[in-house]
Image 1: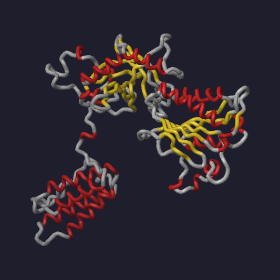
Image 2 (image 1 turned 90 degrees about the vertical axis):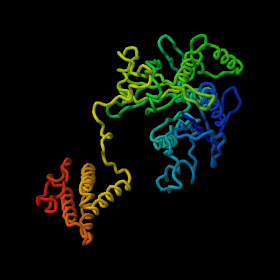
Image 3 (image 1 turned 90 degrees about the horizontal axis):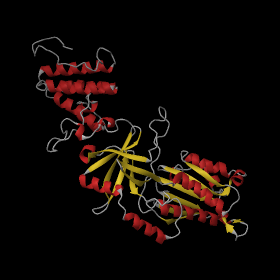
Image 4 (image 1 turned 135 degrees about the vertical axis):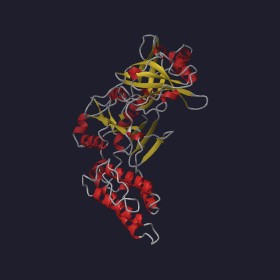
Length: 482
């Protein structure tokens, strides 16, 4: 995820640090050295990472802005741990955070998903001698516990600062390298951004799931069949080169840019399966199903940034044997050659997908949904319109009445039944003298049935029970049919 580096340049960061056998350094010099190491690591291993730099003391200044907007960020705060004194200091801000207005709220927790890493230009003993460590830990807690505090081990020197930033790099900025396999073809790749561990259910299965470093392609499928599936995350898949010893490139800092450019040119001339796969998927209009772990799959596909540029992408499905219901279980998919007949037809003019579910889904039924008030209002108005046209619209009136009754019982909306009953009684009193006599009987009967259902009486609240028209002398009978 993109990174915001926030560096403290207050007066306390100018405190000198004596290093034997060298010139005098200030704490901000140590911080600059550590940040230089972090930025060089990103330039080598995270070339697609976007970083913003903010410096602050009593005021703040955005030194390097983002080139685009993001919803998720990593925030790296570099400070010496001094909390300051008086109004506006961190100590005062934490003590008064609950007394602030919404327009002047404490910045934590951030209004976006984030991780907060605090890099202290001080050792643990310095922070523990005051309440600085407690306040910094409080910052992490305010950010929903997402983050960590790093301190310098031993005396303050360039070597120990570099070691501290190395721990941050190992934790948050280590590139994810994997091997992409398809039969006997393989390719070393980097997955960017690094896939985060995924927890299916904290109560049932709290152990985070991590994708394998061996990404094996198990099959191919048409883009039209895969459609636009729900995914956990999307990642770029980039081919990488290995050095002569077989070690992964990009774990250190490159001193000679010319050597790096030369190596990249040589790597670009070597045939690569990742490049072949990308071109094939793009031309054929297909995606590759890749195994991420036990009962966990994803898909590889070509995505275009523009008319001339496209990238190989990987999307992660939710773990499980059937992440995409219209494809069925992943373990039951197989090659076309195993089928008795071509499931796509002789002319490839049909598709076996989506698979029809064995049980009819509830969303496939003709059900009533009241997501917005306007939907409920429309259904009530439809009943009243038919009520004013009785007895000609008797069948339609009871059909709409029973549909509303069933929905109200399913939602537990009994007050709605009483309200509609009151409306029908009012309509009965407003009937003109020229109205058919049967209209008054039907409205009174329907209102009475709805009121009985609204009381919760078991005989009248059965979901499958339907209100039927009242048989009157005008229709040939004087009995009420339930």
